[in-house]
Each structure stands twice: as structure tokens, then as C-alpha cells.
Image 1 (cartoon, rainbow over the protein chains, first blue to last red):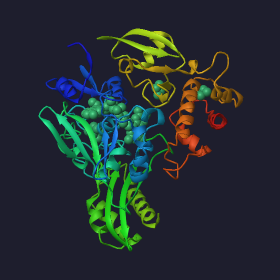
Image 2 (cartoon, helix red, strand yellow):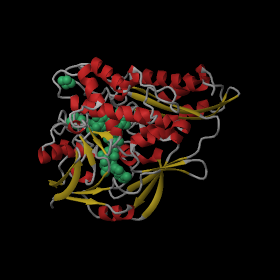
Image 3 (tube, rainbow over the protein chains, first blue to last red):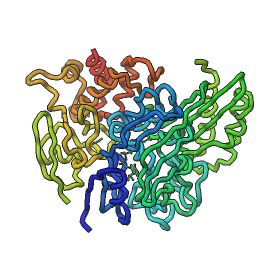
Image 4 (cartoon, rainbow over the protein chains, first blue to last red):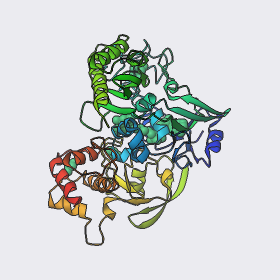
Length: 328
Length: 167
Ligand SMILES: Cc1cc2nc3c(=O)[nH]c(=O)nc-3n(C[C@H](O)[C@H](O)[C@H](O)COP(=O)(O)OP(=O)(O)OC[C@H]3O[C@@H](n4cnc5c(N)ncnc54)[C@H](O)[C@@H]3O)c2cc1C
Ligand code: SF4
Ligand code: FES
Ligand code: FES
């Protein structure tokens, strides 16, 4: 079949154009998909260009939350006055990703669905269960500096590379999806999968499912949030480890705590065990340490990434300490 | 499959026929001979292919030309006003902010984007107060220009040039 490019007239038209074609892909900013086409990782025979769909606005919702269109550019979202004021964790996560000239192209939907940067996945000459199911995982026993310490399987130890998604996981974002069977809402923390026995499936979506928007619920007054990222160079690099933290402390007691970890798993990792320890406890360093240790008790580092355990602990404790101190 | 597109490149209307899998970078360089944007890595990692799309800085190697039908493209070549260089170009010359010059067209377009974004009050990840006005300190310039690599290592002078350009 010859290669085909179509521009979708509207979201329904995009889904219709994508339905029934196994080799179809939506094209948004292209910064991941075009790269993958060049590398030979993706070979769609139909591209449905969604970059001009009218999904490029950020709107305040009646309940005080925010609706972010799927084609809003990462740069525009980070610069949005409400995001900067009310969701600093999201603004900072976006601004810590890629470069200014990439963020001007990259979209909300594309950022969520970008694929792992596992070097073996990107190298056609090495076996990889994600790229070619059943061929094996080259990372296990190989170079694992960037790989998972939580929730991995014997089939794949890759990490999800997005910074934005980690912030959205901590914010309890809800993803609106339009598919051949209609509309549905997927909580962001359930969008990405753990690898299990099917590492080739990154998310719960099918190829003809279109993300139309992402909703952020409002944060109660007094809530503060922060994003911290550690990488191999000061800028323009993916996270080794990152932490998105949302915290509300009243009279020294933690009333709300939502923590998501990046660079540690196949999906943005919501640290529920840590949150359970924090809720209702005094907001002090000892509690922060105990909380994150409870989460990391389940960590299974590989030969080359044991450093991620203490790094995650220190980063999370420092983010929580900063949030509990600041009085604004 | 081919597609017919129209771009406005450095002030001139250009119609061209491209294979729909042609990147904007290849369409500019090979399709219409606009050779200011350079192909460094072809994977989004170096910034040499940076231009202004409808006034905003963007890489051109990871995006297809067909997706930009109707867009106004400004390359480093189209920045000058006749014989008068753009102030950022002047600053690069003045500060000797290049050696081989391969990265320079991308650096200059990116720098113009940085100045516009800062003037609009857009924060960077190193901006302390996300809601306040932006002051282009050297740390800010380094962070905001981090998408442009320079093999010759002219970074120190590039920071000087961008700082001058901000005046
Ligand atoms: C050099 C470089 C450095 C980077 N550094 C970072 C970093 O530090 N942190 C970080 O988080 N990211 C980083 N990125 C990744 C970047 O954020 C992503 O490439 C970008 O967000 C993808 O968005 P896009 O719109 O370009 O997606 P595209 O490339 O257009 O699409 C990506 C995938 O999503 C699908 N898709 C897109 N939109 C939708 C939709 N609405 N519904 C359903 N499917 C959709 C596409 O079919 C495709 O499979 C980097 C990228 C590069 C090239
Ligand atoms: S970690 Fe996953 S993506 Fe990387 S080589 Fe193994 S199977 Fe492939
Ligand atoms: S050639 Fe486009 S970023 Fe390197
Ligand atoms: S001047 Fe040679 S690469 Fe920058």
C-alpha cells in the first residue's frame, strides 16, 4: 500500500480515518513519531495529521479545574498564566523537558504517548520485546542506567520518558479519549501500562483512539506543588529520576499528599504507599523519609541503576521538605 | 504520495511539490535552496535546523513539510533588513560568537525566540518566580539556549551575544 497523508477535518473525522487501518498513526508535533520513522521503529502507511484540529485551547472549568486540549503546544501550556499560578508542578515539569524549539512543536497528546528512550529499543540491530515481541530484552544484563527500579518484568525494564506525565499523575489528571465506540475518560495513572508480558503495549489505548483533552481537577487552597528532576547534564536531557509532589499541610499535619515518580518505571509511578504514610502525619523530615522508604521497599534495582534508589529517596524528601517549609 | 504546499520563506512565496514524508528541513534545503538551516543531527538533538515558524522558534528536522502548508518560515537568511543585520546577528559578530559557523543560523533564530519569549514573560525551568517578570540572567540564557549545541564550543561568547541582543 502506498504511503498516505491526510489532514483530519475534526476529531470525529480523525478517528474515522484511523479506524480499521492497522498501519495508521496520528501525527501531532511529530517530534517523536517522525524520529521513529527515521530510525525505522515506526512505519505507518497512513498518517492522520491532527496538529490543526481545534483542540489547541486551555479552558478554565466551572469547578475551578483546567481543560487542556490535546494539541496545545508544550510551550504554550507551560506559559499559561493559570498553569504558572496554580499548577507550578506542571509548568516546571514541562519546562524541564526537551528544548524551547521542541516545546513549540510538541503537543499534550504526543507528550503523553511518546515512547521509551531505551537505547536498545531505538537500535534495530538489538533484540527488544517492546519493538519485536518475543525477541528478548537486551537491557537486562546490559546497560541499565536509565532503566526501571519499580514495576518492571522479566520481559522489559524500560522507563517512560515524559516529564509532563509525571506532573499530571500527581495532579490526578483525567484523559478524555475519543474512539471508534465513542467517548471515554481514562485516569492518567491508568493510561500507561506496566510491561508485564506485553511490553509492546505502552498504554491502554488502541491505535484509533484519539486523546482529545486532559482535565486537571482544582487544587484546594493552601496546596503547594513542585517538580524536581535529576539528569546527566544541567539541561536538555531526559530524567534519571524525577519527583512531582503536591502537598497541603495544616497546623503541621499533612492533609493532602500526592507524589509521582519519573524515570523509575514503565509509567509515571504514583507513590500510594508513601502517600498513605504521609496522610495525617506530622510534616517533618522523619515522616518524609519513612514515607518514601515505604514506597521504595518494593524497588528491584538492576545491576547498573542501584543509584536510583537513594537518589529517588533524597530527591523526594528534599521536594517535600521544600514544600512544607515554604509559606506563601 | 506527493503533496502540493505553499510556504512563505524569508518573505518570498514558494509553491512546491513534496513527498509527504519530506521533513521541513529537507524541503527548505533541497526543495527551495534555503540553506541557512543546517542538518546537524537530524534527530532534534542539536538545534542547527532551528528557524522561526510564524515567528516562533522551532526545529525543522522532526516535522513534515506538508504539515506546515501556509506557514511563514523565517530562516537566519531572512532576518536582515536589506543590508542591515538583525541586532542579534550584529551581537554575534560583535562578540565573535562563532568559530566554524555551522550552528550559527540555528543559534541566531533560537536567540530571537528566547528574547521574544522572555519579553512575553514566559518563565524557564530556572526562573524562581513563575508568575513574575523575566530577567535574562546568564543562567536564564544558558538554560533557554540549551537546545542549540555548538561543536566549536563558542558558548561563552554566545551567552554574551544573547545578553547584548536583549538590550
Ligand atoms: C532531543 C529531544 C529531547 C527531548 N527531551 C525530553 C525531555 O527531557 N522530557 C520529556 O518529557 N520529553 C522530551 N522529549 C520528547 C518530547 O517531549 C516529545 O517528543 C513530544 O512531547 C511528543 O509530542 P508530539 O506532539 O511531537 O508527538 P508526535 O511525535 O506527533 O506523536 C507521538 C505519539 O503520540 C501519538 N499521538 C499524538 N497525539 C495524539 C493524540 N491526540 N491522540 C492519540 N495519539 C496521539 C502519535 O501517533 C505518536 O505515536 C525530547 C524530544 C527530543 C527530540
Ligand atoms: S527494556 Fe524494554 S524497551 Fe528496552 S530492550 Fe528491554 S524490552 Fe526493549
Ligand atoms: S538537525 Fe534538527 S535538531 Fe539537529
Ligand atoms: S561555531 Fe562551529 S559548531 Fe558552533
